[in-house]
Amino acid sequence: MDSQELVALLHSIGRIFDGRTNLLIVLLILAAVIDCRTRRIPNALVICGALFALVYNTMHPPLAHYYYVFPLAGAMVGLLFFLPLYLMRSMGAGDVKLLAMVGAFLGPLETLYAALWTLIAGGVLSVLFVLMQGTARRMFENLSSFVSVGLVSAVGGTPHIHHIAARQSAGKMPYAIVIATGTMASLVSHQFGFL
Image (cartoon, rainbow, N blue to C red; front, side):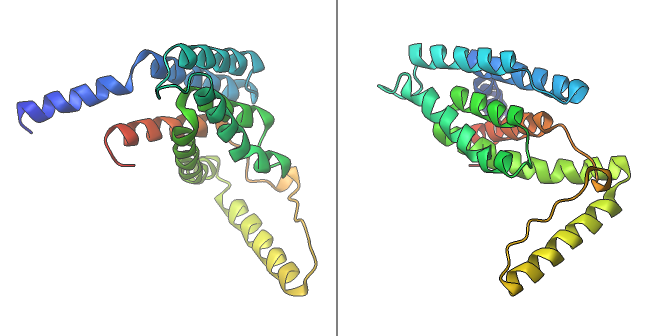
C-alpha cells in the first residue's frame, strides 16, 4: 500500500466518524451495555437520541431540501422493519425503538442497509451466543421441532403457531448488541463502497 492509498483510507475512516455518527455509535454502545446488564433499553436514551437526530438532520440535512423528512422517514423505516418481529413476540419493544432511533440518524436508505446488516449480525452472533452458553443442541432441537410442526401444518392446511416454552429456550441474547454491530458494519461497509 503506497502513501496515497493510505491517505485515502485514513480519509475514508475519518468520514465515518463525523459528529453525528460518533454520537450514534456512543448511543448504540451505551444501549448495548445497558441491555446486557438489565435486559432493557431505556426509553430516555432512545428518545433523546432520536430528538437529537431530528434536530441535527433538520439543521444540517444530508440531502438538500429534505430537512425533517430525512430523519422522520428513517425512523419510520427502522420502526416498520422490526415491528412484525415485535408483534410475533420475537423481539422486544426497546429493540424496535432503538432501530427507529438509528433511522432518525441515518435516513431511510441507510437504515434499510443497517437493518439488513443487523439481521446478518444477528445470525452470526446468535450462533456464537448459543455456543458460548452451551445450548447449541437445544437450539437445533427447537429449530427442528419448529420446522417439522410448520411443515405438517402447511401440508395439512391448518395454521399452527409453535411456541417454545421459556425453560426450553436456548437463551435470549441482548439484541442491542446485534443492532449496534449491524449498524456499525453497515456504516463501515458503505464508507468503503461494499454496498
